[in-house]
Image 1 (cartoon, helix red, strand yellow):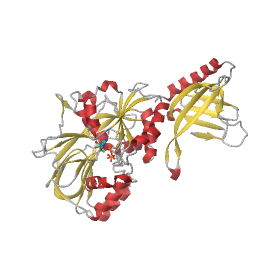
Image 2: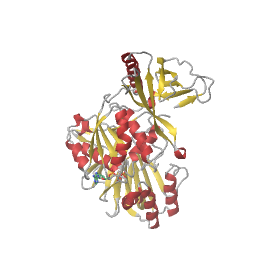
Image 3: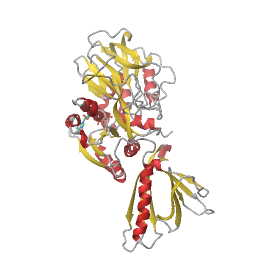
Length: 509
Ligand SMILES: Nc1ncnc2c1ncn2[C@@H]1O[C@H](COP(=O)(O)OP(=O)(O)OP(=O)(O)O)[C@@H](O)[C@H]1O
């Protein structure tokens, strides 16, 4: 919202213009104008102190409703407009905050006429508040299935959903069915067997672990090719919340955590459209196939992730505590690492050239052989990697991380080079045992702001790749996929660009 000192200059594209009383107010009639992009309210007549006009962006508007006055003798017609504007909160952080404005139309003695005016404004505001210039893939009243893990993060997901998300969805006229999960794998089995035509959107209010379950459940279906295109949405309710933080970053929102991140993401859910999400197909030596949207970690990062489970009550601080604990007794792991370098043409996708769901232009588009998704870059795990692969000589590693989103957690801006969803690149980081504890500490302390790669860190390598293979020499240690623990052993993967679909909005910057 912007406030101006001068009177409203007549904008060139006025759609509606009238005078209303602001409720509650001192009864003054105030001029209100609706343009294609804004609602402009003249608050005070010129010459009086204080801001004279307020401007609200329709891009920030999630809903508008009209209603009659409570009192039968009141002939007024009312409408309330709800915005989630970017505003500075405590500690100078900028995040979305609710502003609602209620107007009373009382130009006539006839209640029906005043209600007609309120209805006309409501309908026009709702129409113009829809994302403009984009073909909407979702219906105007989408049917949402919300899967919520009550034990994610600090165990407050249900309370946070009811307090912050339910009111927003109601104001945005979005219906939802809430399913609170009762244990691990329930969500995976549900999406695997569900009649997906009942839902327009599957929303995950949890951490990245539940989203991992949902994606793998969809990929286990016989109709996975269609099922994996079902739009997914994330609301942060876990302790890591990497997908939520990454989308928040790509949009241009400031890095925030907790309820601020939740409100930003709930706004995205109300206003968003599906965007392509890359998946990495992972194969283990037991022929098990997994689909990952975030990361594969071996060594320091997965050790911290899993060993810090016991500090879960601390929320995301658990990762910082876990980092200090593990640094004092750093473990290293012997193994081999190989990869296919990404071609330098892997470009950042701006909103204007972003591939649509059906029209991705990359050579990394999913390749379907028969009914299987073909990992064309990979050879079987029990055979050597193809000759064009780069092979890192066998070494002792402190960490190996393959990450495909910008954030590994709400305050872990691990891959600042990732600017948008669906870029088609895996960012492979590895550090050998020669890295010093001091360097590792510096790396993790500066990761919060994403400044860790601004100076060279000896013995840490970063390379963008499209496929990789990790071969631990001993099956000890911890490996995680999207933060979930898997048995440690040989594993390889390749990226499939835009295979899944996730709700986001265009960048605001
Ligand atoms: N009702 C439940 N009880 C116990 N575990 C559950 C339940 N529902 C889901 N789970 C499991 O909990 C695990 C972690 O869930 P989730 O990702 O939501 O939280 P988190 O680990 O706190 O967050 P993050 O993954 O972002 O760190 C998932 O593997 C999921 O299978």
